[in-house]
View: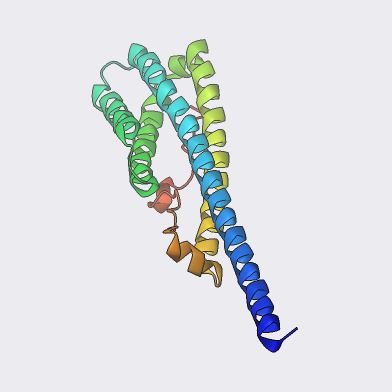
Length: 189
């Protein structure tokens, strides 16, 4: 065999290795993006569950504390803003911060009504809401872990090359901005 043929074979093998590497990196980025979408859907499901519980909780409180309408209306308004938000995780997190603050105000109102705290429907709703808050926290951790994986893959060499060519972008974490509302609201009324 001549040197030209051997050179072409070497170039062909190197080219094949580069193509296989690029395909592997591309498939990894697609897999991470799908995990990211799936985990955001999990967060969304849990948030919707919370949003569905809040009107029932407000109605139960309203029966005992009807003159606290401003607080009750602020909870419903914050809940409705969250439901209507279809934006980015950052935008959702801002609305969630407002909702958590309104739920804290509701907790203060509930403390003033011992009969309400003993109501069986209220106790059941409180338990469901507490469970939902734990599920939201778990879903958020999973989503943020997938964001970390995507951002690492998109920013590290050599996968940054493939990410740039195929427009893979960094993802946004789902974080509550205000440090005072970073934790789930205490629902042990």
